[in-house]
Length: 320
Image 1 (tube, rainbow, N blue to C red):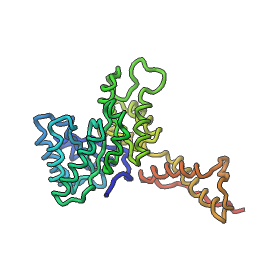
Image 2: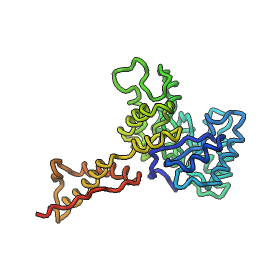
Image 3: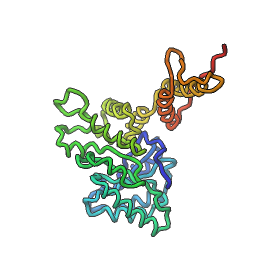
Image 4: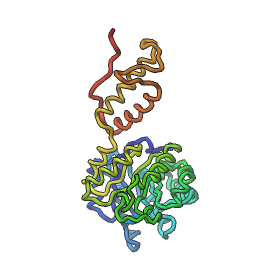
């Protein structure tokens, strides 16, 4: 099965299917992924036109190496089946993933996977090539997230849908991502974020934070992006070009951290070799490094290389 799970997703741009100017703008933005939205961004009376616009945009191309995703409508609507059939029949060869919003059970994910099986077979596409991204947007979805993540080998990404989840939990806040008024003892979203992250890592999926709706509040964006990036999330949605640079920067390592990670990997490889004394632990400057240090460094190194970073300094074995 072809997968995009190992490709960077620092920034994922939400693009309304009915907005041709935004679709054209998306082609030139420095985002790792984008999704053409047939759900919230398209009025009920315009779903058919939205599908046609998505097919045309995908077939026109011009998205470079960006991961191409289409968000279909959720299974509790009348539009999901037609979304899948029309988009995959019309542009399946130019599509990487479908996004399923408001996923609440493994059965919903399995249903989408089975439908994709049939459409791919009927159109001569490689069966299993199109992945599934799953949005967790309700208390039930969060409770059953482990079953949802393992419902199909097509599942590549778990995504926090913060606004709907806040409503489902009846959280007393109108600002997506900010702490609810009166909550001053920690982070109200920590359990939610960690539940998604732990499940994603358990099943080898990517974990993506949802949007920050206060588009002009760039300081707020830095704060909420920093929260999920620090935990280990792979990326975050962006809604406007002004958010792209901040999110890309937040989900990329600092240059000094990237350089240090590379040094740890190089040094540990030498220290564990015969030339370096075949040691399982050694000193790197004032720091002891061992196999656990190497594993941590590999994470930072991989994130940096995925972001196109290159080392600005190299480690060399001692000469004495």
